[in-house]
Length: 171
Image (cartoon, rainbow, N blue to C red):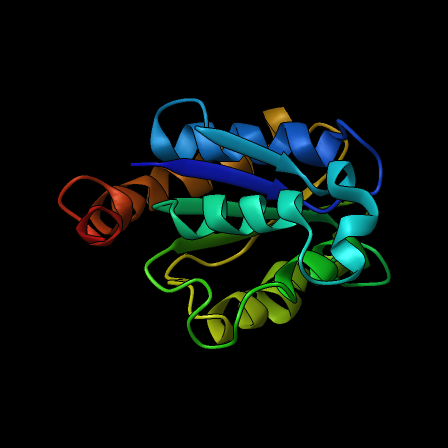
């Protein structure tokens, strides 16, 4: 299983990045193969044809499992993540990729943001979005019992869909 983490936080090496990596590790049983901190792609995300952005898109498309992470801004994911997702063709851009919508926030008020805002976009791009989104509070995310409950519940599904016998290996 090839695992990638994509994070759209405007702050480099953010808590969102650390939390998304932790989620990927717990879902896949190992460190992610690739970590894409979108802030590192800079202005290349503002148009089409940037080599670094194209490379990041290919990395995502060749992955079995991708955790897409964002902090919660105004009740939704960041514009930075939106710019990256615009690089994928609709309907097929994430075909064959098991996608996990993940958001970190400061208040429980936005607990449904990953499912209501990010998951539909990943699905529209053709991603296999079989898992519900995960939303964690940014303070104490690593010790949050919801993280352990989520990963224990959904790891077998990830293994079935993206593991050696699953969907991701058949490409």
